[in-house]
Length: 321
Image (cartoon, rainbow, N blue to C red; front, side, top):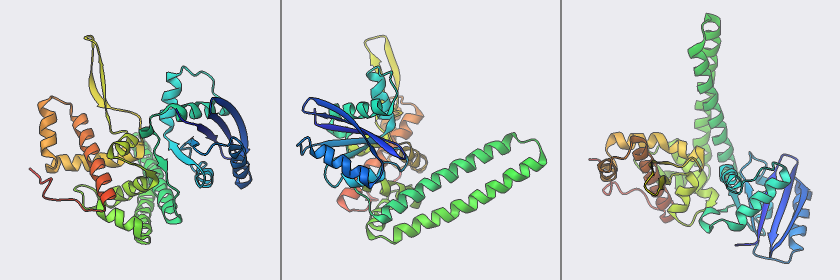
């Protein structure tokens, strides 16, 4: 158990709940510098130095308060799915901003240390990378949606409009990809980490940029912490003699990071990398998706280790079959 603070953040306001030495209190502040200063003054009034502050990753609304309060206290940004799952485990039925802050504080109060990776304050270049990567995801989603609409379109004019929008989105995506590469080249730390990650088989420039963003965003102490953050830990469903569910990937974790590793894992499988791992899992009759998930986890572990050690991938270690 730790002294914990939970923040539920919206565009203009944020609710705060504290659990400090058995004391529980709540408050609300404006989501601006004046509100951040009032928050710090309020927290300082408890006379405790070892506060751990948790908040959900809600758009960009959390960034300013996380940067400000992170100068004074430990801050963790938690995947909303984890908070939602925790609320269900507590049979929480009330849904208000104040109650959400209390729920986040309770999660922060009781969670294992491995589930609370500390957030690092980002520099301007890293913030640009993060936001342009978010734009890339948005454009890809729009392009997929347009393709789906094109499939069901029956009118020639409607098809023409959808095709035009798909082409326009494809051009914009290329521009964004070029901008991502430019951002990385403009900052040595980003470039150094990205270049190391690109030595991993099947990891291209875009996946390396995504991995770089997340590796530099959190203070992950171990590879297990990073893979847990990504949601790449297999999930077992067994109970007594009656429940023997198939192993599967957990639905928790960072969906963007998990999605970014899927195609590289497919490429690595097709090219015969990590063949010993694949043979071992096939011998246990593991399903194909779990094998792909295991390769995704392997890639994440290698990426973490290369980042931590400042090394490049050892081609001799994982030769294709």
